[in-house]
Amino acid sequence: MGIGNSQPAAASVITGDLSAFFPKQVGPPSQYAKAIQHWMHLILVLQVAACVLRAVVLLDLLGCVWMVLLCGMGYYAWYHEMNITYISIWGAGCALGTLLDILAFVIPVATGLLKLELLATIVRIGTPCAELLGALFAWHLYRDYQRLHGGETFGFDPLGRTFDGFDPETNPILKGFTAAGSSAEKKYKEGYGSSNPFQTIVSAPNPFQTAPEQSPRKQNAGCC
Image (cartoon, rainbow, N blue to C red; front, side, top):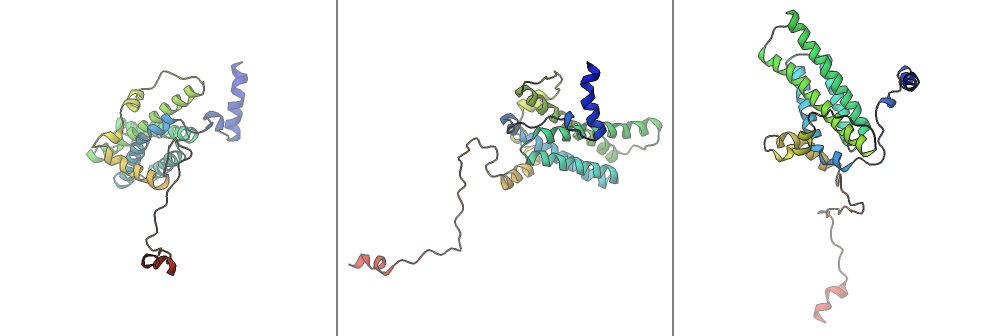
């Protein structure tokens, strides 16, 4: 029975179709996923910062390209209203990047091939931390999606309480990190996450539009 159940997944790997390993978004994203978007803003800003430092400090162009793809996938998932399919792909990439970056740091240090410098060491440690945070956040949203759709959920969620009980937007220090994501949200998604489907957008008046001229009868109405 186990072999029979694994045949579709194995076939999808052979044919290059990985959709069987990621959940498909059914209906609109949950209100909970929309409510914790500030965490997505913060994580993406941290990953972009890690990407820049990786290029400037470490001169790791290959790793920088990987981080650009990772940040692009995360932005794409956020832009599509926290679509769980794209969130899961982004989270899997974050988990893979975390593993590779840890190995790329631990092995050279253990063998004496890497000379430890303060700034470079901070970047090498901070980069997988930003990736790990993204992986855990994606896992947290995956568990929420599975719970809403009657799927199996696992108890492992180490940062679940942090994501639930703390909003980065309320912290004066972290609020600056999420300002870029919040402004982009207002610019490109006016009314994003609104529960009112009949909400209308009132257009601003045109300052260059002249008022129509009044008819002579209306202009002289006061004198008659």
